[in-house]
Length: 616
Image 1 (cartoon, rainbow, N blue to C red):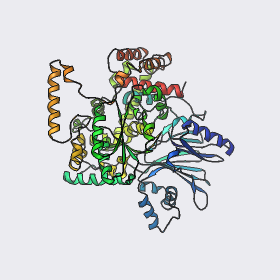
Image 2: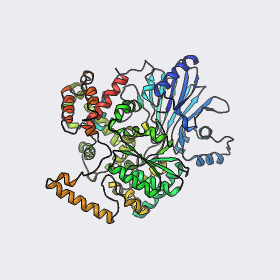
Image 3: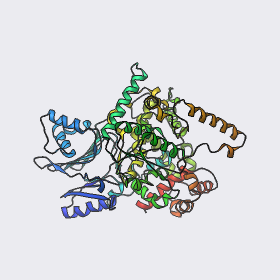
Image 4: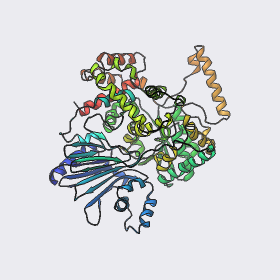
């Protein structure tokens, strides 16, 4: 996985060169990456980037050579930023991202960060004061981890690179482990290790004279009082921002790719990209052959006239690539959610720039539930938010079960901190409306701590663009009244109105078109017939309810069974002290006998593999 590395340590330059090389090798050492480093006494920096992109970023200096500026990522409002400088009578001889941003910093100071529409990390090195500033984008789309050891400071795009420094304790954060076992992701800025933290999104980190400070420059401010406004006006504004978001990142160039599923998010991007340019666009789908996702994605691609590529999702992909996927995500992800990694190498051989429908569901109301329209006391409020997780079956080990599945010491050490983290995340929006609390939680917790992992493994081979994360589009989503978020009402209505032919293609989630038409009537009638057949016990005649794109439930029982049992039933895992040994044995045996413990086994596998890679 590409990214950045660096340190402030009392190392001479020669020592620093060896140290930064060790960090680079720990982050990524494969041949399709290019590493560029800068080292001086006490400070070192490195960037690891894909060779194929040919846009490797170098450090640039101000006229006095005492401020070094380093940029990593992409800017999407370049012309606007150049115009800002020209308005200040600053005309650049060499218009590069680094030069634009350096001059903005010299003019506006740290406030320049709020001007950026980007997915990036920015490092500013002040030589005279030995001060480093690190700035990330609003969503934190390039995760950065850091550790402070006394008056020393290290940072990296991957935790594994920080562990090159043996002074960093490998003490495990028990609450983080508990959160993974509960929510399938960590909360707040915790990581699996107590002394390593994730940099908050939309922040400016400063380390100077042994002191670390972090201050936010952006806050997701949700509209609290909504104007009386027509649905049509919301749809028109939404479509304007959607089109601009795509146009900022896609200029009609040929050879661009899009990950296309059977869902709405990627299909929306597909329709917009097809409108912008008639240049050949590659679309990629991967799944079990014959899945609903594969069939509907192929149909949408045909409608758009793309060059469509289908890749089978092998049942045993984890045997070859699973442990590497865990390493790339530093144990932050459930292995059953990392299948984007299975075929990214083949996709990257076709194009090295790929769009993804990341964030579209969360920002437009995927997590909003009808029960949010009520007033609750403080305790019940949190329980209702947990119910939303239960609705979508994304609680791995539910909170009432913790006492019976966790070891006594693990349970006692984590039960309060886990719920406190959840409560803190939910109330951080300072909003009273529960839909606002949930949207804010998804944007600041679930998306940057869980959903981003699919992006991270894909970046191992390609540059990934995320148009739903566009600043203006995201800001607009924060103005929506709750009822337009429920069931993603606004997004659905906008798509149906502007792209009715695409809306006639079924969505994988329901198996039905989004719009009333002859096909929708036929499929709905067939689903009704299937329901009656199943009620009569004629399941074989009724056929499957749906054809999923993945089947880890059966794969864990068949091709992956030996692998699963060898990892989860070995003495090291049984005695980690997190889950009771008998609980682990029961979960494995019950799953192999026909029960569905897929998510639980996936979480256990991820945590155990990470321990073997980093702790043992």
